[in-house]
Length: 331
Ligand SMILES: [Zn+2]
Image 1: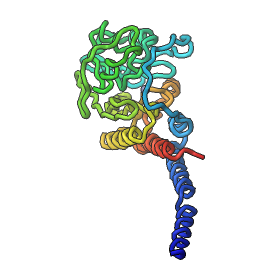
Image 2: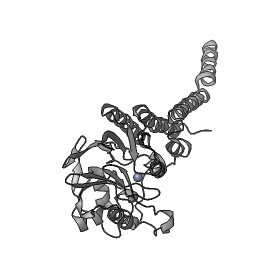
Image 3: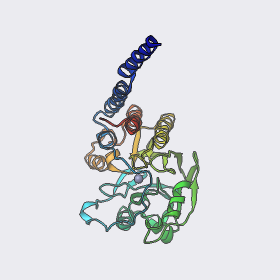
């Protein structure tokens, strides 16, 4: 009996010293590091903004999101930037930080994302006019997700121009449930996007890829632009940061969506990455580069299939690291 007790004690001692919490934490720490290294290697010098936001400084978010009223608008010089033509049929009408894109077709315009309420009038309506485009021709507005920095101009476009608003079902729900988020009024529920749905306007179509994670209804997109007549396929990533409630289940959803979008981009032969934040797709820098592009030089947004594949490795690997940190925070 005594011998058995000693044997059990020795076994327990060995278990805890070799395989106990300390060793487990060490192994998890190594696993987190492996994901961070994989993300850093995939990012290279191409996706430093995405790497910094997701791998270096991810935020922890409480289990329930607060429904807060928007603060006062920041000073104009913190956000205002001139609009620009980026491809034959794609125009930038965004701000210094947030992107809004106008995709033109034979039958009108499809607008992708709408900035904040405070700057959508000047950047989008004003920007389209400066570029010689008629805001009344915006037939569809596709909202990647219902956060204030992307859905802010949806009500304006719906009310003033009768644009049809396309959004993921759960994000329409979150707008309807919000008590404080829309003091100036909410866009009315319109088109509920389905995974794989095509929003077609004249000779142009945008294919919706449902990529829940950033919000439950986040939409990403695949569409074609033309660079001096040459067609290029764009993968538009609709939600990137981890500012959803920090749970393992939410990270699992996010990670699955990154793989799904990577596969959709690859099968569509996408070579252009776009997003709704300059932080992630370097839109404002690339637009400046475009202004000094010489004949024969590649378009700054055309990064190629291999780089696109690496982009979604960055988002997926950073999410894997953040997911592991939830259950095994660094000591
Ligand atoms: Zn967001």
